[in-house]
Image (cartoon, rainbow, N blue to C red; front, side):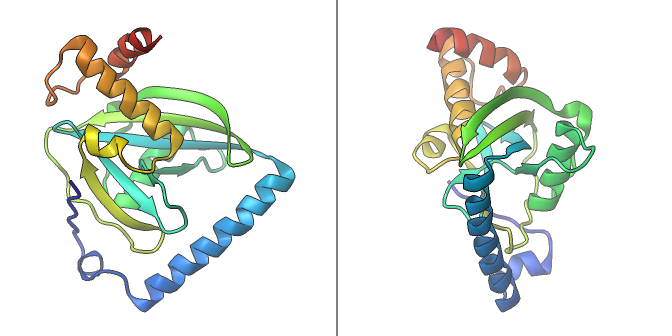
Length: 195
């Protein structure tokens, strides 16, 4: 179920004409980047955050892609993956977290969208659902989704991996949906169960 709440007047009112212009610019820039990726086949490094509350995961959709994803983006300069995850969480959905609260649950490199994509995904379970604020420019949707609903969506490939492992962990460990601590340990159990 999509639940959207915003903290600022701008986020509450929805996209403006200027926001729509930014969305169009993001779409065009992404198309150009995809051409570049197909020619150069670069390596990329990104970080994402799977943020959980009461068994639901926070997903976003950017203006320039159809897939739902986790809040995240490209590592800049000398940033670590963890620093990138925190920055992107703040920029994309207006949430501040502490680095020590993030648990690394996936760190892998795959070919994706004509580039060698190194992705680090961190997980965080929070007891209270935070208020989410999007900019209506890069991020056009944000919401909390159940496992069943998440797997029915068009997803960034690594999000599907995380969600499947989490679902498998629930059945392997017989854990209630409200107990999300130690997600990394569950992933190890789920990987064994899925093998």
